[in-house]
Amino acid sequence: MDIHLHRTYFKEGTNGALFIHDSFFGFCIELPWLENRRNVSCIPEGAYILKARYSQKFGHHLILENVKNRTLILIHPANDALKELRGCIAPVTCLSGIGKGTSSRSLLNKLVSKCYQAFDRGETVNLIIKS
Image (tube, rainbow, N blue to C red):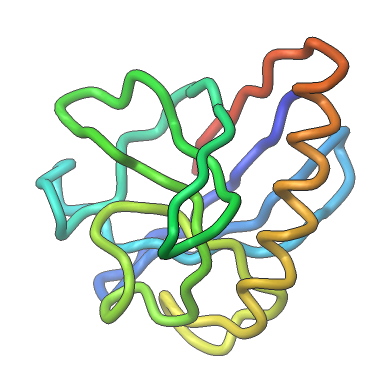
């Protein structure tokens, strides 16, 4: 299964739109592009494999594999990129500003459900990021 993330870059943050099977799924927020610097930048555009992950802090969420010069890049809930993200991606139901959104947890749960269903079918889940 392929998930497409189409980004729009701003100085204060990055907003994106998620598409699954060519259908709009929701929005994403990220940090601004700052040359892939750890903890302050979104990751480079490209294709990444998603895997299931669980932690006490976020519950069920997703992790991106093989991000150049970065580790632990997750898809997890957050509503304010500058305050809550360190390079990760947060799905949001609605955008409320640059790098800000609402109802992140509910959209993450829907995304995780779709991905886990694909994993159960033995599918690889790819996240393709572009502007």
